[in-house]
Image 1 (cartoon, rainbow, N blue to C red):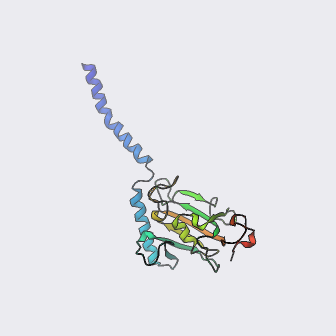
Image 2 (cartoon, helix red, strand yellow):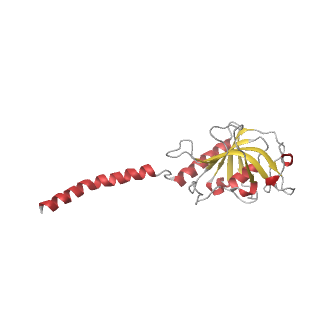
Image 3 (tube, helix red, strand yellow):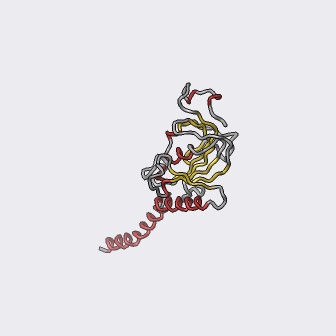
Length: 211
């Protein structure tokens, strides 16, 4: 009887420690706590900053496929900080191909103060000389990225903030969790106008629009 009482006492004594340990473990592995709320608040703040445009380097751009006659909310726009202005006279359209340098990341999280980088053409710090530009169709991208490209000129380098509604939505994609605001640094190098031959993927350099 005494032996069973002792075992019961030890079990009751150790139970709170086990619960505390489990709780601490949950806290440390939760990389994206309150992720939806944080992302919505983050983009809302960026959107307001872009609207204010205090330093003249910000703009908001409506989703490319949303007609002007249709009412829109803040998450129907991307927010853009212009890091460098290009000199090109035209912009790519939805059916064009582009060559771009870019870096995509999430908002700051538990382990990534500057935001987790999920994809990039740069290796390390921004350096066009060592970057490996990517070729892609404008229309093959998420709505926010495609919207940005269709307003960029050759040589533009933008920091683009995309709400999850124009990104990967509530489901996410791969390492990108649902409800993620996406932050892209994008530099447009050149683009190729569709409807000409050969196909964009094999076009000689002279057929790419570079100015």
